[in-house]
Image (cartoon, rainbow, N blue to C red; front, side):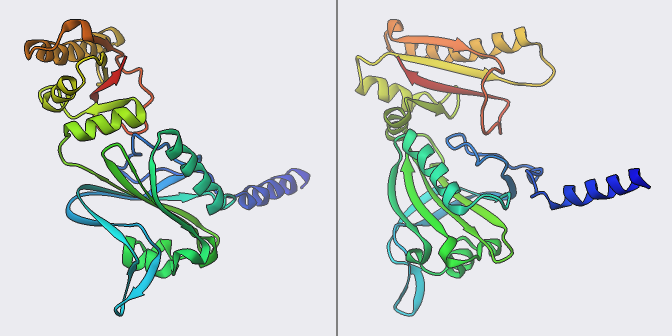
Length: 282
């Protein structure tokens, strides 16, 4: 009887603890630039090409009978929408501070931010702007910001619902193709930029022509399954050297370029590809 009583008490205590992180929805990933809030998990994820995305740079207002952001800037590109749920023990205020600190660490430009009722109606943010019903929460608990970092724009919203559940919404808009301006902005803000492919060297070549004294390091990772560590290191090194060779053939001084292949040894937040390339300043 004593053992049964102990087991029953343990079961009740287990149920009383807040939920910890659960599995992400299939096919979802974190953005490379922003690590997720600890213990959060992805409950909704989508990607689509959009001809126009109105990035809010003002609170929700009723303008000419329509409730919409008071100000907005339009962008086109690949829209990635991520909805996270967070254990109920955390507050939107802590979550917002976490992401704001991470954005500031990569020198992101904050276009607009608000909190509580300054943002307007949570109902409008949830159902009109993000079109995610789970985001409809208590007005006084909400936080929003819009920002630009490198060649990417983003909208962040976090709120607590009446049932105490806490959610984070991230909308990220990235260009469909890399450009010299986007690559330069990435390098200026975060010291590196991911390359879209080994074949498309035009943005990087243009950047090097515009910055004739700049030395660079071209890096590559490869985490393909079914290969040994030695093979992955060689594959990644070869990929980096291939890009360097194309740049040298186009007239770039070899002394300005170094290469490195790290195999699978990159702790990426987002690994939607088995391999990838980046460039960083030296």
